[in-house]
Image 1 (cartoon, helix red, strand yellow):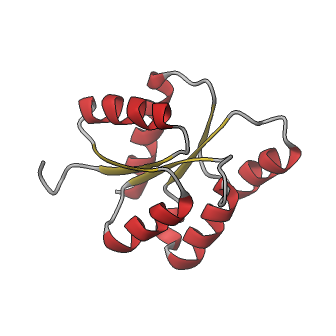
Image 2 (cartoon, one colour; image 1 turned 90 degrees about the vertical axis):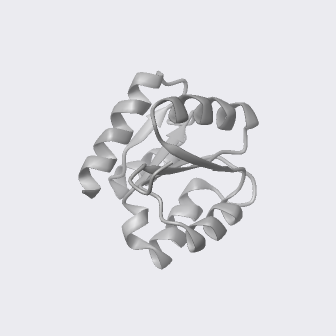
Length: 127
């Protein structure tokens, strides 16, 4: 892949979600890295630049909100490129967090077309 290929980091603790994202996003022409926890994601962010980060909200050890806070402290430009994925919009804390940060988010289950469109918007906003 060339250096112009947009790079996406997908963070989710569900292996099937990671597999589906890799399959879909690589066919869309993106370079994709996956991790199953926030600590691995932070480690990769130290080494590579990503055009988009897709993060699940509900994960063991480091939630999506906690991950966002750490990324925002170390890499504020990257924090604006995080797309959150959640199946828990009934949770008051999750809903408040997503409304306050103003990042794009998808509600599970989502359509691949929704993912495609939101990624394009985030990349367009970064250029």
